[in-house]
Image 1 (cartoon, rainbow, N blue to C red):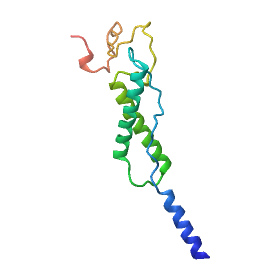
Image 2 (image 1 turned 30 degrees about the vertical axis):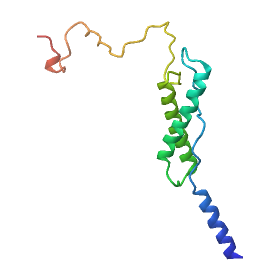
Image 3 (image 1 turned 90 degrees about the horizontal axis):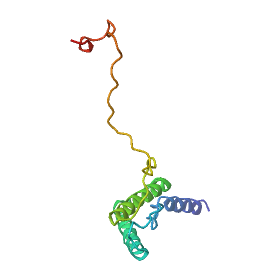
Image 4 (image 1 turned 180 degrees about the vertical axis):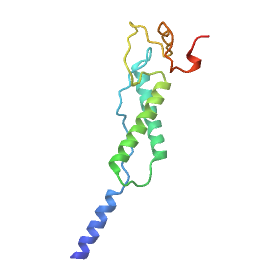
Length: 132
């Protein structure tokens, strides 16, 4: 009886070590690109799903200690490959960052330093801060 329990426990543990399934559907929303018809979108969607599945299958390990974490990594890898493929075909994919509708001018990344305050720099200022 004890031997049967050990065999059962070993087989359950081996079942938990199996790799997570490769994702087959994206978890992100992609919308048809401007001027793209729905039939073109569906065709591209199917091709990009196949591309994403093949990309994930290339990098899928044979076993994983934590199949939940591995499953999340596989889904993220699938979503990135799917989004790249759909974007390359001219469709709209989600991006992170602030939303801008174009009504406000964008701030320039390169800012100029403000002018120095009037008067002489303090005595402890380095020599290169002093005017000539």
